[in-house]
Length: 278
Image (cartoon, rainbow, N blue to C red):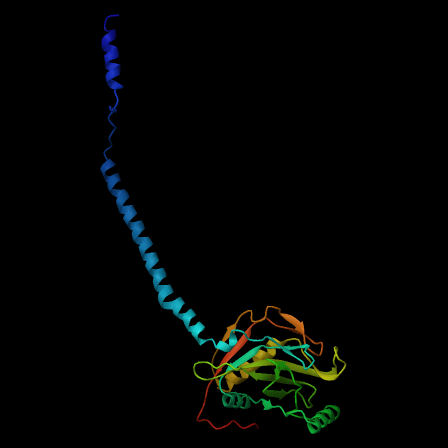
């Protein structure tokens, strides 16, 4: 048909490879293209500022604090035993408190906090405590039975009477670590409990003191007493020191704990006179 060739030629021209139709333009397209880079630059700036703030907090706050705590931890705390034992090897009271310092510093702190050194167990002291329990007479430094940690009985023991006779008392046994820190001080691992009455052991049938189950309260009391006396430099906690949060001691008495070990660093008070027990 006439004109048909011209129509086909026009169609072929429009569909030739590489040929594209012009894109419609709008009046604000140039401004739109400029807004995208500004938005991206602002986003990048915010990300960089956030990264910088994170770095500053990590480098100057968190990591130094973690490192300080790591360095402050006494080497004897790494593989510490957690449960005392009786002379028969039966599990005893849990270790729940520790102090870092010299023996003299521990003595001064406990005396200033009005805790009495326990008498050694002898025939005389055993007869006296028995008589005082029966007659309800006070015996502030009554002996405590031997428990074992690291294969040896306690190095020191202190107590604080409750009431008018030795049936009930706060008491703690301490074992000195063989390892020393960089200042030459040992750790004194303690098992603090409260005797609530005298009776027969549920395991052996022997006459013994029975303890109350809340050993955390005794731990916290000693820390509070020494802090109030002004002999606690600082302290920190070791969480999950005890994986098992409950158990029974050598007398068959139940105990419960939150699992934390209280670690106190003692003030030296080298020039202070030995505190006198009133």
